[in-house]
Image 1 (cartoon, rainbow, N blue to C red):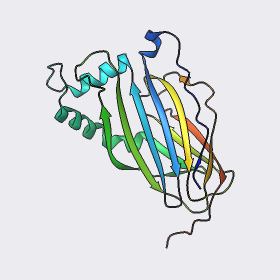
Image 2 (cartoon, rainbow, N blue to C red; image 1 turned 45 degrees about the horizontal axis):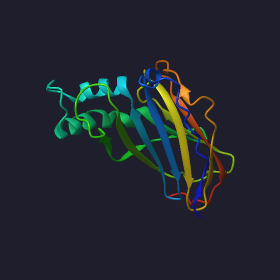
Image 3 (cartoon, rainbow, N blue to C red; image 1 turned 180 degrees about the vertical axis):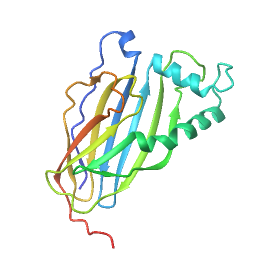
Length: 197
């Protein structure tokens, strides 16, 4: 049975200039008997979109080509597995990229204040012994210098039932050095998973 947990809504801060200095972090966690998938949908608003587009524009001509986008994704993709962590019952599980991150410039390939989206996808083998009451935590260290708008959605498969923890303040300030933004999920029901031999 497919069960969707409650989505914590993102209440946008008033004022266009406030939103312009944020990165929206939408976290999607799916747990099944074989794998757990973690997907992020990051929306960069004006200030941070401009910064990242400048990083993409390696020839400095103000226009971002597809090869420049691909080179940017290659540069940042390898480190993303170190910046997103998954803890299950307090044990860290090593995430791997499911496939290359996707970038969408939203029909604007010029460097300047705009919006764009970045979507990395991770997975890990579901560990045996997950029990009712265990906590699953997604730790997000991506773009810690930027203020964040946060949401989380969860989905259980193969008998898993999950509930997303509340996000007390959808608008999260810049993170301190080495600090993670933690997104908590509660396991309400878990299937029996045989340990691998």
